[in-house]
Image 1 (tube, one colour):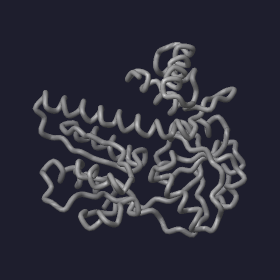
Image 2 (image 1 turned 45 degrees about the horizontal axis):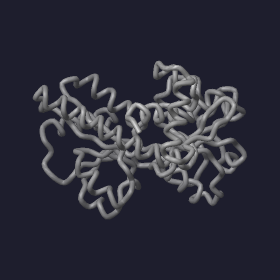
Image 3 (image 1 turned 120 degrees about the vertical axis):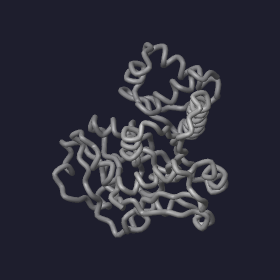
Image 4 (image 1 turned 90 degrees about the vertical axis):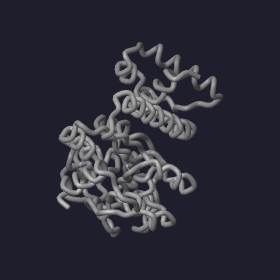
Length: 292
């Protein structure tokens, strides 16, 4: 098993098409397909279900992708730390999130406005057994209030940055596109795509159905980029959030979901200790960014 194979696997899992993934990786589609097949043979399991025009992670693939993502996150952190050490940089901030794509506007804006700082940002595992160990490595955690295990909440301070709500992502030609809202019971009749199972955002949508007394529907779990591509190809509809939709400049429509759940409280968390000057800069920037 080679690192390049794992990179190929991750790219195919995120894009969902061999041809498009091969183009992104600058290799031929047959070579990419052969690499994935060799990886599956080495692991002794099928990682994808194959269809006429797409390739989709199965349950075995979802498990493997979770560990591959963690490995690449760790390698990326290592690369940044090595670069920081080589350049003797002191302005470096470690951040963890439970839903990375929800915070990209903040992270991008900070990087552009404060280029003298470098950021290490990774997705935080919600596993309660490892949460304490992992969260201790980061200065800040960007998360929804319910994402933080109760046993760790007392050790953290926080500030509410914004409230978010569930929406459904649809193609402009979908019947829902002209609606002002959609009933959650109506979604059971649609081909649905969800975030990866086990992630914070996936768990929020599970709780949404439970709170509204609606049976959780059969749905496909996949990466954000994958299900966004499927929506663009009119293959179905996907769950997203109001905040993500607000920042999307494409033609995709984001329709609010009628539900009885309170809004999600998205917060910035930090450990109960004096913040460094650099950390104070980021905290102040985040509060100003969300007009707190």
